[in-house]
Image (cartoon, rainbow, N blue to C red; front, side, top):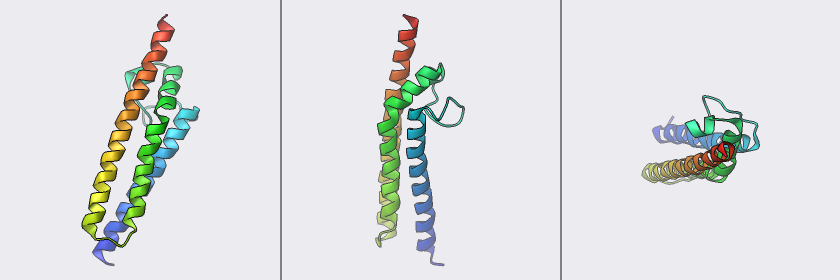
Length: 123
């Protein structure tokens, strides 16, 4: 099998899989189906403090988290295009930076939402 094809297949599976997982996690956490846990979601002291804080954080972070997943899925589709491997590598790099940016922004706004819940419960 051609070396470039193997690289494309591996990158496609990884980027598509991570994108689908991110979109699913964002939806599940924001809907309350994904409860507080030690493995997935925005796991910070503020979000793990209560079920209400966990849900508030994920509701607020849903959109940027889904955009992270969509950027990964879009990258997976670019990998299928008949372009040179350096272009594919550039697309993967850009998608990973976008994913990281969206995930960090989601964690930031989610943490703020969880802190707002904590402040309300202290009052």
